[in-house]
Image (cartoon, rainbow, N blue to C red; front, side, top):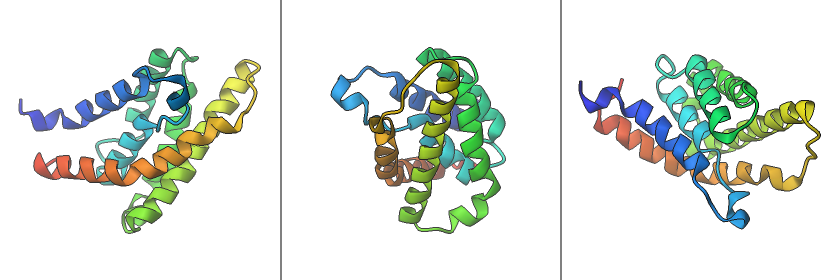
Length: 158
């Protein structure tokens, strides 16, 4: 088989690796939501290939890699990607900066859902630093979008 049939899976694997790579504690709180960003791009670009089922499976893998309870990240990813998949035709027409703002809102929803589910299971307290990845995800969206768009066009993924 050609490499082009594995490009989406390889980009998701790269996002999973970036999500768990060790970083200094002062920088780790600013880590963007790599998995959500990559899944968001593929959901906007190819909603027939990357959908809520893929988000559920990748969320389970992310739960295993991060050591959280099974289903926490799956539920949060499925919820955010459902909103994207339901509105992908409208969101594609927005400018990159408007999309970045929407990604920020969805990233905030993602983090709040993860916090809420972890709070139900344990006694986790909410800290404002928990939302720093929302800002970095918004700032990373134009570069992730440009990179994955170039890869999609180069490999002619449809």
